[in-house]
Length: 120
Image (cartoon, rainbow, N blue to C red; front, side, top):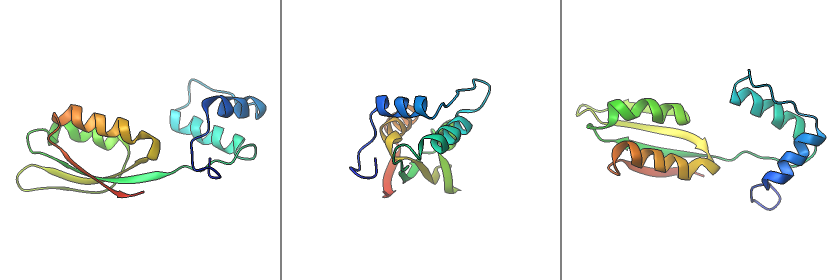
């Protein structure tokens, strides 16, 4: 909710989707469904997506296996493989997914990765 800078409650979003008559097609991708739903409910409730950029350094022992999941979680804006086998990248993710992203990084690297929030 851009006016209060807090997320809309799930019930309010569901109500707006019902009013806008948004149909969920299970054959479409999640990203496509989100775009359709956002376009339909935007006239009914004010919506703004916040994204953050997180710099990530995966240690050499975990980088090859963890890279795929990290890259799939968000949009990579920059990345580089280091000579020692470590991976450094900047990932753009929705602000509301930060906790899940950090949990994923910690699970994949057993807490050995380094992260830094670059842009809010």
